[in-house]
Length: 380
Image 1 (cartoon, one colour):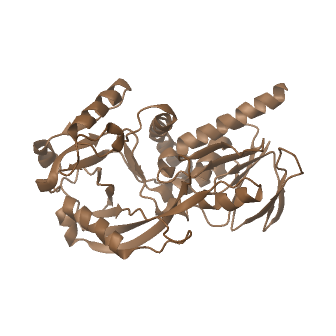
Image 2 (cartoon, helix red, strand yellow):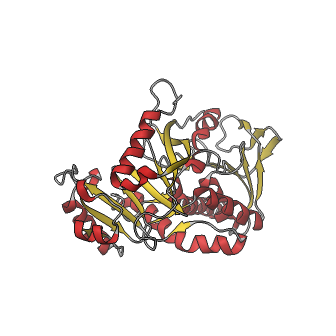
Image 3 (tube, one colour):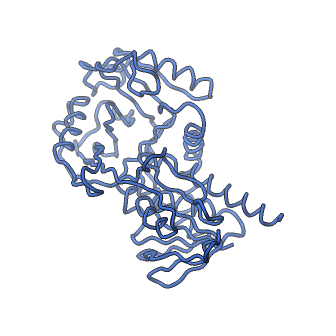
């Protein structure tokens, strides 16, 4: 069975590797850029699963599936490719600023200690850990944190952080090892389908026409023009995020305990050698789909990080960068499933801020859809 995947960010690469482990699939991946060059390459790779406010349904199940899979996926890819994938197993520490409102409901994500105690109980019943730290414990374990305006912290020892680009490149190499063909620098120009047919047969690319049994659209923001060619436009809008790479020259606090720290939606991510990624802004388009990075917002993120960890004021800025996140309009993220009107076009796109987190679960979902459809057509 010929399968074409359009898009090679972390989602497309994860799908390619997952499907490469199933017999009977001949897989080709197209992307107009090298792998991990769009939103994946700009991501911080903070995997907020257990500490997220999602507690039931598909949103939680996908997070749980992915967090579990990463524990085996990273060593699996490293063994297969010989690549090292930076993978921080020291958890995520969420600081609770004093302006948190403890009366807010759990779903708000900004409540004080009481809602977090409720979440801790829910996670315990689900087989996961969360710890609630008071100021004394926070001071003892993380002396780098400015405790003056913090009411406490929530520590999630089973959540993770990883390097999204290193992960994607390893997924590509592992998939190639398993026989997947990747074609980079190739643009999909058009899609052709017979009238009143639920089957897409051919796509036109800059390398010519390509036929397949299945087409998987995992192109992030590029999914909108692709689906428009098939007369069912999936409306995905860009949301810009900016981040900084800071170098302090030595680790913050205890060098043996370097979790990702987050608070007020600002992440401080240790990347080794006393370096930290700090981000990210959330910037919506004000006119059309064009967004120009706002330097004041980036400075605000930096100052928030310094307020949490004052020593970062002494750090040198190594680089700044930005990327566009694909956010679906008028529907929840992500968009996974069949493209309406087609039996053989699957969508795996518009993950907004959770593409890296949900990549393994998305790949599982696509594989199940393909295998279910294949068994149905065989039995028919």
